[in-house]
Length: 139
Image (tube, rainbow, N blue to C red; front, side, top):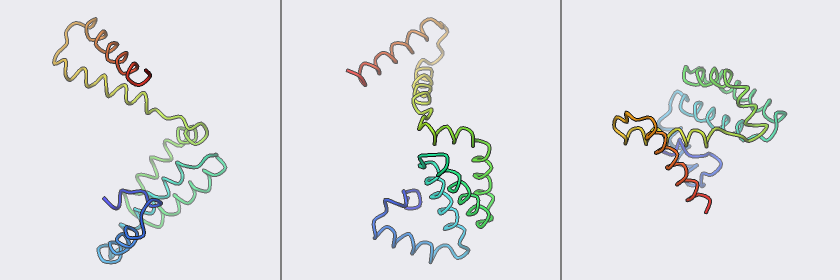
């Protein structure tokens, strides 16, 4: 779990444990390289302007090339494919989080419905669930 935590928020003790893991359990350096790529992607996604994003993107690319791993190379290809969307995130801060949450709720309704065959009832349940969530979130 230590590898999944945000590097900036690690305590001194956690940083020491992480360095020990890299020193003792990562003789090839691949684990540390992948962790550094992950951390730099976080930096990239946190940038507040496209001017700041460009050098952060270049740094990710450099780390990926240095790591020479298929996993990080695949991540780099994904970043390149989604770059326009990443630019929107950096520029506006807008995400698809609310839409994804709504889709998850709808899928849950569908799963618990166990074979709805009446689309009007299905639509009504979705609308009622949405209204109930809106009421709870915005009293």
